[in-house]
Image (tube, rainbow, N blue to C red):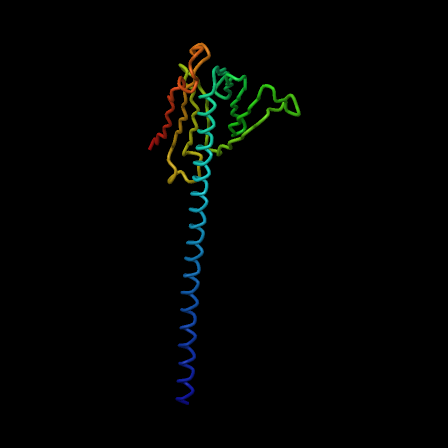
Length: 196
């Protein structure tokens, strides 16, 4: 009789140990899942930041290059800017449908459709980003603003404004024997102001 009680006690203690082990394993599994979830969230946030930085870098390069070669500008409103180079190439910047669109209309090169540009680039903005164009005193500015209110990661991504500025030389300022590359002084400044 005593031996049977001891056996039952051993079985009961083993069962309690297994229940504790299962509970600890479940808690560790929940912690591991939460950690994986947070890692994936951070990866997506930093991938988005990297994509934004790459987009802004490429946009800045194109915008400055186009303005340095421009000899005339036609600023229609905050969402449209037209540039004309000395060779007669027309470059249009448009902001619409959360995109900054760059279109190149080259003289002497006809596209398949007369309504279509020879080349076009599109820079997508995020839902919490807005952009505006302005021209003042031979200095064109493209502002891309990120608002923290609409972004789901507002605690980690502050309000940010990126300004891409570049100067251009108007046709009236050109002298007949001047080289355009010597006259086009780089007035470009790029600022990223964090309003924290």
